Length: 100
Image (cartoon, rainbow, N blue to C red):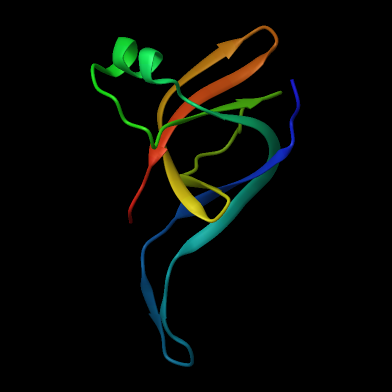
């Protein structure tokens, strides 16, 4: 299994107004990790969620991200965590596309 995709984990804070800069987005990069990222198959998507959603991905990491994060970015697209699993050989999570 290759860990060849860079995944950025981002935390969303509250928007706030800074007089010199205007409104701040309130986002902060928590960490960046190399991960194995694959698409969730249609059969598995139907088994787990009861529908076919092609925007879901599986992210496999060696260790879980320890801090709280709001969404992750893979190749410029935003994804939110749907479910996660810890195993002896690593950590995996299913994420769905996030439009926010």
